[in-house]
Length: 96
Image 1 (tube, rainbow, N blue to C red):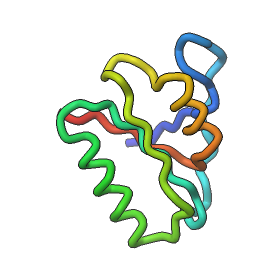
Image 2: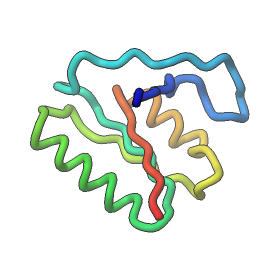
Image 3: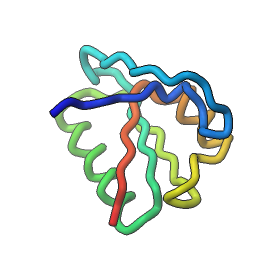
Image 4: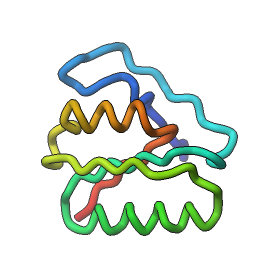
């Protein structure tokens, strides 16, 4: 099984560009963790718990959390800017 990461600076689908794989950081130490919450079920609670657990394992520089308006829409432009300008790495999750 392989892990695929997309470059978050590719922009929302409304501004399509060629997508490329993001480079995997050597470490999360000092990283600002981005959380993209889809708002479904307990996704926010899960991602908050995941961020808290990661913070016990590595010295994060902070968390940038974005809560999308819905499952099938990208983050709004302001949230997208906060995420791409403020996060070093990001995690998105689908909650049911």
